[in-house]
Length: 381
Image (cartoon, rainbow, N blue to C red; front, top):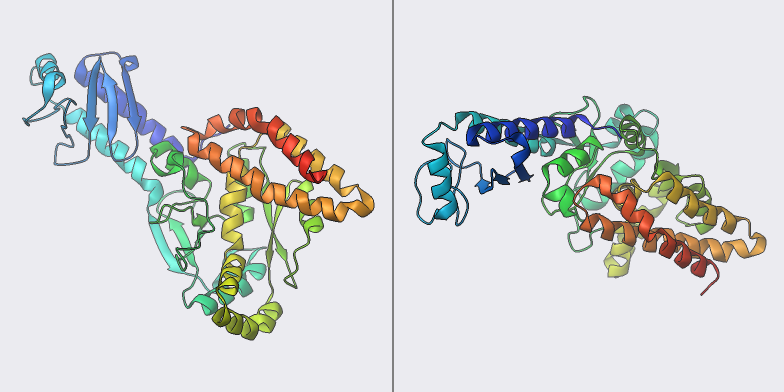
């Protein structure tokens, strides 16, 4: 599995920091163990606990039982005294420089600029997908009075912006809430940015790549499992479980988008219905956020399912499509399984993991239970 540019920069900075700490403390690099989360460094180096934060010109901080790296502070404790005795006043500037480089690499994936997006800009910028996006982009802005955004990363792949959703309805979130591995871990945030995703101020993964860009990024990282997504023109607001399952059985997650005619026909009914009852407010909120929801909860949530596990799930989907007259009802049940049960299982696994690479093995362990649940659903049990 490959490593993207952001994650590679973080890993390189981690190694440099470990080397600087080892040299400063007079221990082997192998004796430095850290938990690096972007803002705080927790480490054990040569048997001593360290906590380092980016405060002050020296870049060191002492709290409680952690070592005091520079200067004096009350309550430093036995570990701080042991460190001072070991160092004998040895200068820590190389560590400070390595820390500054590490924090720069750790924060870079979260930095970028946001600009408003309209339909004409979408059509010009996103070749192949822009024509499908444009009507939805303009209708979103008209519906909410706030435009969708483009997210241009400060670093990373030039000319490859992602979509940034404004927080127009905090009470009805349709996005994946960022698990700790993506919210608090420097490598995890870098990995997420290398896939084109980002976390908003509310902790939701509401910055998402478009399907074609997501596929390119995954291919560059050597990821062969999971599902690719695809934008699909939807002339009417009718959901077909059988059609959705047919696309999914081919390994593709379909994301439906209206055209301009559909938005023109629904403009007045939409405005009236959303004034009449909250149910319609939620319905249209779900509609306008379907792309973000599918790319966040589904495409990202499923993206590290291994090839063998994916094929086992899709074999059941294909079997469902071959049931003849019984296929319609079975397809609806299968669609619910993929939309709800599979997605919930993946989200729960992501919440528990310390690193993205651990997902596939954990999912494989859960696969027999998932397959049994899918077969029960198809049988109507």
